[in-house]
Image (tube, rainbow, N blue to C red; front, side, top):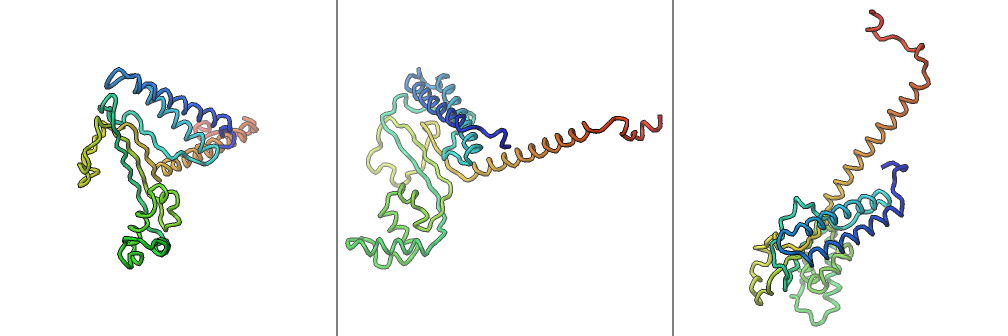
Length: 243
């Protein structure tokens, strides 16, 4: 986007407020829905998706920053068919990491092992990558590892968070053998995805915008040059010469 078309800080703030308003409307529509496939819920969802997309674009154009969430369009989202008033929720999280600095990972695990006299980890566990991973994830909450991943020699990949609705909490141990199987997409209340592919898509759009801007600038420059030329000074085309 050219500097002339860059959004103002006030426009970005207005877009952020629009997202907040759309969130409230969506929640109100869900709370007051008349049943499955309530059109008011779909309308509120689409308004929220549009507001979030607008805010993301303005935020990037103004500050070169993006939001961490990707809200899928309505055509990508299965119709919700879960309980109208869920009494239980399941939160499923997946985060991918590349082990970019194994020595840093081992060093951090070694520090934890040395400081924990009551550690149940086998002796020498901190000397292997597999053992070090077990020590660190046993010591720190997943959210803390996510926020400090570079300290642990990790590089973030894609991540997603799904919240699914249920009518009751499963019995203890019911799903432990296969915790991520049998997820019904139509019971997903909301999901949030983070991926570099979203940044790549934005980069592609920026390249196209730059090409369009360059083309427009070249066309304007050519028009300016032609404006200063007298028609009598132009050489006739071959077709005109043969007449």
